[in-house]
Length: 164
Image (cartoon, rainbow, N blue to C red; front, side, top):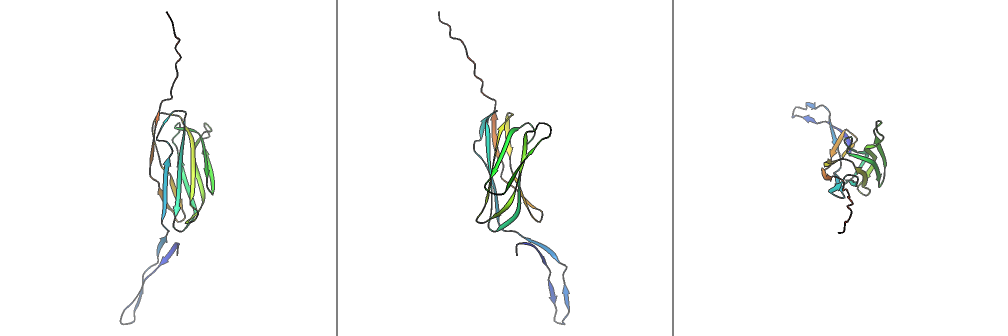
């Protein structure tokens, strides 16, 4: 049965003696998948990055929590939506900008969850992200990492045309 199962073994010898082994907890969880993708792998500062996390299972997992945390100063204007369940954007008290999110809800083989995360990139460099999923019984898994190269913002310079 899915969930926590307590298993014990009893041994009976030819003389009729019975020995019992202590109970052992066995957690039975259906197969699951956790994948993260990014819409664009190269952006400029000020552009929007879009991540999509998909959680699937062959049975039922409930409750499931999917989390993503960003380092301070890397992104701003974080928003998130989901195909089902509840999404909470976690903000920093210091600057009020989104720094992470939590999604909570059940998933089943017929109802996977898709969480879409959008934010504005605010610093140059390589942004490497993954999401974590956790469900009952203290089990968790980390998704595949995705990378986004963030380049400096483009500047436009207007030069006058001089005729001689």
